[in-house]
Image 1 (cartoon, helix red, strand yellow):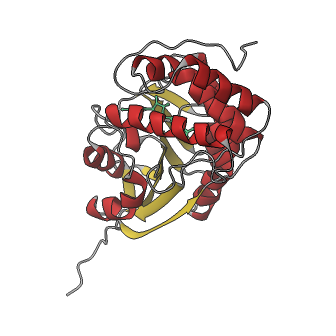
Image 2 (cartoon, helix red, strand yellow):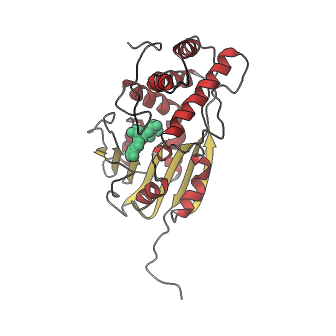
Image 3 (cartoon, rainbow, N blue to C red):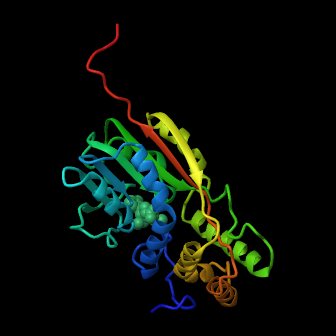
Length: 279
Ligand SMILES: C[S@@+](CC[C@H](N)C(=O)[O-])C[C@H]1O[C@@H](n2cnc3c(N)ncnc32)[C@H](O)[C@@H]1O
């Protein structure tokens, strides 16, 4: 079993938290624990049901594709794509395909009742083009649901900045934001989603935000994230080994009430095409 105090990561380019490392799989487990309930609430409200067709973009782990497959049943269709789909389980009621949202064309254009992406667009260089690729997959009247963090809206790891361990956690969170920004992530993207969805031609646009405060899932996610980016933090001179080890030990001891950036969930509908023209 991997200790929270070990793990190496190789500095590189592109998506910072790439799926090739074991920590990515751990992160998907804890992201699911923290946010799948929020996502499933939106998916249900937007009318996904038996027979629906859904495209899950940048799916990461199996949590949401499996929930969608259960919702649409054998008469529906769930397509789960990712630039690296290795954490997805083909044969569990959903189809798995490798798809780069930044470069590949829309699969099955004009056919999906719902297209969903969570914590993906923030990492994609041309976000407007990526949104257009997803919107083009919707049938008339179909919904696009995009969920992304706004790490600049709430930048702290510990809201209760009560001691040195909490302040160290906040410094390290700032360091990770610097790494993400260096890879082209837009740390203020969440707040722009309603406007971006309107710009993509969608109607009935609205959004909401949520974030957890403290608890074991936040601790596990933080430890996995820190171990994932440890080598990057060291290589960039943004932290040293002693600081990272002390932070991991404080997480392990349950001393921190760790929190996350707000997840902004925004939705909009492709206008329905009318078979008649008024007047
Ligand atoms: C932070 S994870 C989120 C995973 C999952 N959607 C969730 O919320 O748990 C980001 C995911 O987006 C994927 N991704 C990053 N860039 C992508 C791209 N250009 N096209 C498709 N997927 C991409 C990553 O491989 C990773 O699985």
